Image 1 (cartoon, rainbow, N blue to C red):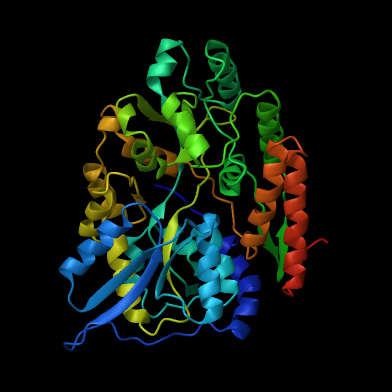
Image 2 (tube, rainbow, N blue to C red; image 1 turned 180 degrees about the horizontal axis):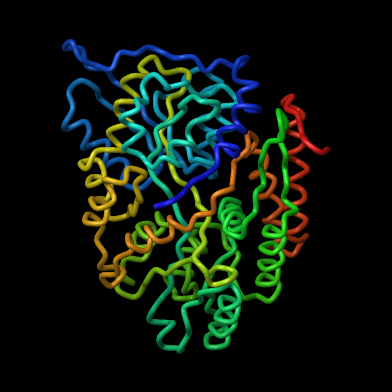
Amino acid sequence: MSLSWSRNTVATAAATAALALLAACGGGGGGDNAGGGGKPVTITYWGWTKGTQQTVDAYNASHKDIKVRYEEIPSGNAGGYAKISNAVRAGNAPDVVSIEYPSLPEFVSQGALQDISRYVTGDLKKRLLPQAVELTTLGGRSWAVPFDAAPQTYYYRKDFFAEHHLKVPKTWAEFRATAAAAKKADPRARIGTFFPDDPTTFEAMAWQAGGRWFATRGDAWKVDTDDPGTKKVTAYWQGLLDDGLVNSATSFSPAWTGALKKGDTVGYLGASWGAGVLKGLVPDQSGKWAAAPMPTWDGKPASGMLGGSTWAVTNDSEHAAAAVKFATWMSTSPQAVKARLSSGESSAYPAAEALRPVAKKAFDTRFYGGQDVYRLFDDAAASIGQHWAWGPTGGTTNATLKDAFGKAADGNGTLSDAVRAARDATLRELRKRGLKVAGR
């Protein structure tokens, strides 16, 4: 699989800008007692990914030197990140937290996480996808242990498509035509949803189209949401919304889930992890769904990455070595992957290449009629664009997008207005934090 991000994107960006704040914010190491000597260490872990409770249970059952207390929190953008940030400010954060790749630079720049370079060995890095290691290496230092990649994937009701003689769209032009045909066949049916509360889905679309929102120029940040790819995506989705060809429900809300259950929503533009989530939401539709590559602009394979998780150690932790030992086990142990997928609701695509056959074997494909979805994930991951980077103000960018997307979905403003507002808010936040901005 090839996912070769240039170090002039994420790593260099963090080195020149995010870490400018880090020296003043902390980021030092905590204690390094990894257990042993007959004195077990207890660490706390906050996360939300499917199958985590089963993974923690498997670890506790098989390890005596370190015990893990797990607390499930809301997903990051649904309140989890706010909870973590509040705990950091209060000085009572857990030892280990789930942080998605897009949010890692911001947590690092705010001094919320420990530099775990001394625990992330060369041997560990060799076992993980090199590009995932790059995404967690900021300024030459390791800030998290990568867990998975999340290439875009399209899920669709194959029974509905077959009944109405609809083609599975390979291009975005075909997606629009199929959406119109589905609506004509059944006025309630929609083959996709614009999630106003989830900017990361839109960002993955911009990534797929060749956008590059963040970069560095010397020691300054460059923010560009006016690129041709982003403009194309913005105009396209505005057209789908204006013509009523997609839903606009909140992601994973009762309204969206209800539409799935009633058969009104017959397609889902998601990522590799969505395979497990979907079958957990509508188990009675087993055998009716299939997965396909994400539509592209020219029909050639292309993907962004929608999410993807890492395990990071907070600055409050006094057991950094134990925390990294546990995180490493979650990311590299076959036992961990088997336990996670035993939940039946996880379709994690590991960053550890050696674990992908384990995940593939552990994932029950009956919901997808026996389809080899992991082969699809392999192909999608190989097509992920190489030049996307995340900035140190992701919280501000996404909060602004979320608010403005919600208004646009209700007809109060446009998606273009939302992207422009997010850019302006991002630039203000960069300056507020004392970071240089290129060209403005």
